[in-house]
Structures are given as structure tokens and as C-alpha cells.
Image 1 (spheres, rainbow, N blue to C red):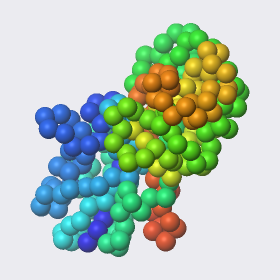
Image 2 (spheres, rainbow, N blue to C red):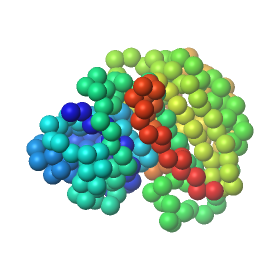
Image 3 (cartoon, rainbow, N blue to C red):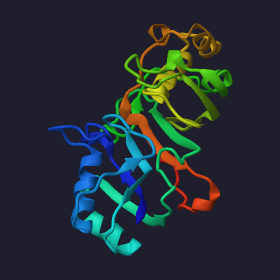
Length: 259
């Protein structure tokens, strides 16, 4: 039996999603909790691996088990064995063709910037703080050059292991609510650090350090060394993975809004 789960987590206390030796990861906590419920070792696959400090509202995973449990039991049993910063939101039995990563047709993220003179205390691990004024309209204008299919070499980490850098951004907008500036992005897939590098470029444009056309120029030069600073992880939220309608997975919760 193949089970899909929707996972929410606060990434500030983890060394990212992926299982690693001698360090705390989301995958490690999830697999240990599910093993308690299934009474056998469990290995999970996720829709999109997140880095250290990155949060998720609805990370989608799947695993296989011959244990007979109801969907409700998978949720309650896993949560009883998980730490407070990880929670299973739902469970669904899916067919064996479903794969959390390869069946996904898109992924969505939100990047949150707190744009105010004084640094935040309560939200220090939830937002990216920038004290200098940001021009969100100029940032949004710069987004236009990134929408569509492009080679995003200038926007991926130097250590990115993807075979190629061609990705399709379907939606990218910047808007402000009070002191908070939100960057919303959806693509068919993402490269390592791609969202944070896009955010870093847009922040530089918002500060007036570069023109709005810089996003297009970086696409053309295909050189990460010219791409500016990678924005901090704390402001990044994995919102959801998108799947074909026949899978009928639950809708994600509303994106984080601190305004």
C-alpha cells in the first residue's frame, strides 16, 4: 500500500529536509515516527527537498507499507511520535504509480521580507529582514523577465547537481502589505537555491542597486558568479506541490501572511 502525506514543519531547527548522518533533519524525524506506527522501517520520498532553515506549509511525501492502518491512524500515530516543529496534516492512500516528486507538475513557494527600520524579534526565524526601503513595484516589474522557460544558470547554486538549468516559471509576483513584502513563485521545478537567488536579485533591484532589467541580463549571461547575494533561508516557505487532478490530494493552507 502506498500512502501520501501532507507535512508542515518549522525549518529553523533542522539541517534541511534530506536525511544526514549525525544531524537533525525533517526526513529523519518523519521516518522514525512512521516506523513506530508501521512497526517496520520506513523510507519516504518528498516533492521538493528544502535547505536548512526553510519552512513548509504542505510538503508532500509518500512511502510504502504493508501495515493496515486507517488514514486517521497514520496522521494521529505519526504526530504522537513527532516533535512539536513537525506535523502531519493529512494522509491519503494512493496508487502505486504516484510519486511525490516525479508525479508533481509544479511547486509553489512564498518568500517573506520584513521591510522596517528595526529588526524583528518574534519573527527572526520566519522572515528576511531588510531595513533599507524596498521598491516593490520595481521588483514586480523585474519579475516579468523571469516568467516562462529559461536557462536559470545564473540563479542556481554553484554546487547544484541538476543535469541542466532549464526551468519554467509559471507565476512570479511581488506585492507589499504594510511592512511586509511577499514574493510568490510557482514553477514546474526548481534548482538548488533558485528561489533564494531570485529573491536576492529582486532585493538588490528593490534597493535601487540594479535596474529592473538585471533579471533579464542574468538570464542571458548564464553566470552564477554575477548573480548577487543568496537571500537568507528564514523567509522561505515551501507552500505546496501540484499534482494532476485525478490524485485529489487536499488543498494547501493559506500562504503565510504577517501583515
